[in-house]
Amino acid sequence: MLAYNFFRPLVNIEYVKVCDQKDKNCHVTNLPYQNSTLSTEERIADLLNRMTLAEKIGQMALVEKNSLGNLDDLAKYGLGAVLSGGGAKPEVNTPAGWQEMVNNFQSYSQKTRLSIPLLYGADANHGHGQVPGATIFPHFIGLGATNDPGLVHEVAKVTAAETAATGIYWIFSPNLDVVKDLRWGRTYETFGSDPQVVSKLGQAFIEGLQSYNKRGLTVAAGAKHYISNGSMVWGSSTNNDFFIDQGNSNISEAELRQIHLEPFRQAVNANVKSIMVGLNSWQGEKISASKYLISDILRGELGFTGLIFSDWYGVYEIERSKYNSLVRAINAGVDMIMLPYDYEDFVTYLQRAVANGDISQERINEATRRILTLKFELGLFDHPAIDSADLKIVGSKENRDLARRAVRKSLVLLKNNNAAVPISKNISKILVAGSAAHNLGKQAGGWTVEWQGIDGNWLPGTTILDGLKKSVSANVKVEYSLSGDFSAQNNLADVGIAVVGENPYAEGWGDNNNPSLSAEDLSAINNLKQKSKKIVVIIISGRPLNIKEYTKDWDAVIAAWLPGSEGQGVADVLFGDYPFTGTLPIDWDL
Ligand code: BGC
Ligand code: BGC
Image (cartoon, rainbow, N blue to C red; front, side, top):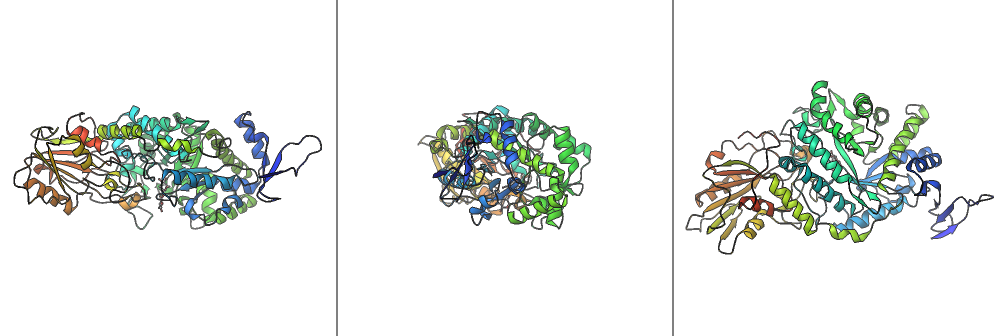
């Protein structure tokens, strides 16, 4: 890099302009806002003063990384934030690959006139789940079953550390939806149906995430989805492919406050740094258009001062006209728009809206100020590049041990006849069957590597079958058949363990009027039963399944939710090394 002194003031050199080549890719250094010894307020005041309207508007855009055809657009439009949506991974999907990708994006922001760092966001719903090699924790529904805020705090802290190690300091989590209809495909992303539990665990999660602090870099939580997603009505989805997700909740204001506002109140008390507005509607109006819910209640009543951002393309569903939609959302109080594509349009519309007086300069300044505040608080101005030494903690033994502990505590014993569990280790033969017994993709659920999850053992971890085998001595024979075909077995096994459940799904693709077991899994259980003295059924699912008509034939039934990469935790409890302590986060009609 060459340093040219283009703007040489008469007396003191106030700042230095740095360029890649003569007059190309220039940015400035040494300005007050770049001085880390000044207060955040002073730095923001200085920076805001220097920004053009176009630069402020750029800051308000949150773009999906796969929609950036040309990375130079980051600098051209001065884009404020980029996200990886579900499955939006780097070419080399490893922790190092993620770090390199984010560093690369960041390097473009450094080439802009004012070098404002980029905010990079991602979902880390159950650990940094998109990255093979990261620790994958139980999905929230399982954490809800633990009902253990201390544990949830630890899980969040490790999630922050693993995500930050790849250069991502903004996490679209926790999910604070209070689920009232288990047919919803996002049930497993919630802590359950009890507002008190969601509030308590949500607070613990936020505090855990935001307690991360390394070399002056911290992590921001993005609590979602404000508000009332859990009460949407079946059949009301505005998305043609879905039934309930992205739908309408018709509840009264009293109910909205009682059930759905409480977790957000706690989140604000816990100093959550950002809140995502949902794709749903309340009483027929899209939340992202509701000045009442956003400005009056969230800002005014709850006193939230952090960043409010919208969800995936949501604002454009307010009205047919994109211009009107943007005007309404921004005037309702949304500061940053998850576009996630079409940033050229966004810039044009917003400039026009300000010129027309439909959005005030003041409102743009306010939104920009919040975005910059977050970037300063995260430490991004002072440390835009990441340290590769941090990568070694991703998926470490210690982190996996924590996930294993979380799995143990999430298991709920739904039925136990004839003391079928715990299973003694002094037996001679165990038969194992079912589609989820040896499948890390299934046991990790949606939002794992891909948006809709994956099928099979494509990531480091321990399947439930592996865990069972490791728990017993070589004297105990453990035989496995996915379909439960044990016809060659002559003697009855001491116990048959079926691990069955749902295939991965995410969002509205998981909306299901009658979630139950597949014919294949039911047949595997029946086959297993023919060859076992007792039958233990472990359910891997994102929600309660309709299994009422079958359970009378089974000795024990265990809800294991979506445990993630550490299947050993299931065996730990099954063989009695640890007790069953999980409780139902949502009613299960058995
Ligand atoms: C989901 C959010 C998620 C976002 C980015 C949206 O479709 O509703 O929960 O954070 O995508 O992946
Ligand atoms: C993205 C998700 C997003 C979804 C919204 C997908 O393509 O990967 O992150 O939530 O679209 O529909």
